[in-house]
Length: 387
Image (cartoon, rainbow, N blue to C red; front, side, top):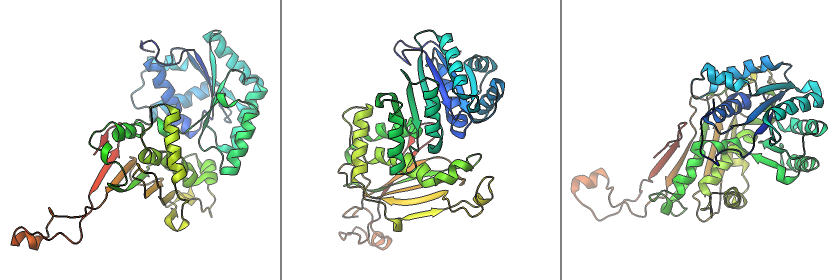
């Protein structure tokens, strides 16, 4: 299944991946197809995947879900030979089977890979389920030498995030913990850095002197689906604005990092977040898409937002986000995420005379109401940036 890749590319050691929330929306849409393509491309030359979730399934039942996710969400057609090879890497344990069953499944996977295998726990679960998954790993004795990935949202507010962090440190050391936002793995999101800092046309003028504001839009065709339990507790603001969209805002407004390493990039993004003024409720709009309250599992009186529009202000020197608008919406007509920047107004508009002046010939009088210039950049699903 895997292709030959250059030395030094991919993990140094075989990996056993314990995927919690393996039947959830994120796993089906992103993680399982992603693991499949990594394995097919040769980036996981030695790997085993142990799915873990609340669903009472056996291995064959979970394989059916995994195959369905590839058929529906994989970016390329999955051949039978490739699927058969990938299926050999997969096992499944329902949470109801307990820590001992999980330990046994991980042990079998480790034996198949050899003594050099490493253990990775990926928690694709809502905040309320994170600690129970960590407790299960502790009871199964699967903590020492392992790494754990915590998906966003990390808690539901500052107090719960601090508490979750403290509880997590009772089991795992900080060096074992990776808190991530999968949105930053998208190629168009990463292209923003190249567009800003490696583009000789835009890099010199990407600052508050030339750009008035940036607008970030994430309209989606994706409806609620099976996410009612998650969305009713989270809503679009926690699910999208303070996670995905603020990360994109950080990329749009940050100064150039000293290198493209995690720490320098995080330092520059944190400067943006520290410089942001608190959101003014008067500049925040919340809404629901029509029919949300009729979705299965949704409270008929729910006031959870599926749309948020907000203004954020930053005082960074290099970034253009002196005013940034963030607007995610579920179940809207389009799907592509986009970011738009509006250039600052010109002090004079000598090259745009009004029609009456054009008929009279050249004039030395400047226009009294110059038209702002607009530069629009759209990140497409294919990873290209269009200007």
